[in-house]
Image 1 (spheres, helix red, strand yellow):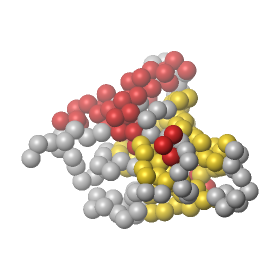
Image 2 (cartoon, rainbow, N blue to C red; image 1 turned 180 degrees about the vertical axis):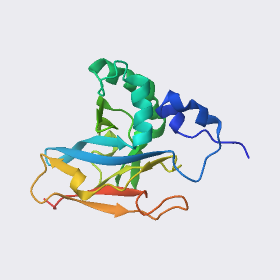
Image 3 (cartoon, rainbow, N blue to C red; image 1 turned 135 degrees about the vertical axis):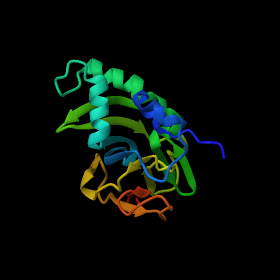
Image 4 (spheres, rainbow, N blue to C red; image 1 turned 90 degrees about the horizontal axis):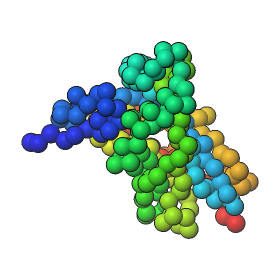
Length: 200
């Protein structure tokens, strides 16, 4: 059977050596996620995502890109990380998809990327807009961040790490877990954040 190229090769050139390996039964990178959902005119319009990486991956990125060794990323260092270890995730929709009714659309663009270090852990933050094909779709809206190949493991988001900005009265979010695959675990499993709006 021909080996599949795992998605991490697009995440960091530093680990390109893994790209020739076959898909494996366990992840190599672990991510805790946060989410800020922004509303305009009573509807969700964009989401700002926060990915905090495990200590091992964080140390690898810091060793490669923290050129001055000060334990943080300057604006220039963050821009270098963006170009070298983030933009290629477009091929995977930045592991982010939006669901409304029976329609699902992967993220196709991002903006305002920032990489930072805190207590030895790397965090990526970036924003992406609700795709136009879903702008007038039937509610509720779901936001899903996950790598189905399970090479990168996203932890199921904690409710306290979801924030709403500019939301109309009565808006709330629910976390819906999906059926777990053979490779997922209770902590690292597919789930979507569903934005529930009261009927006008």
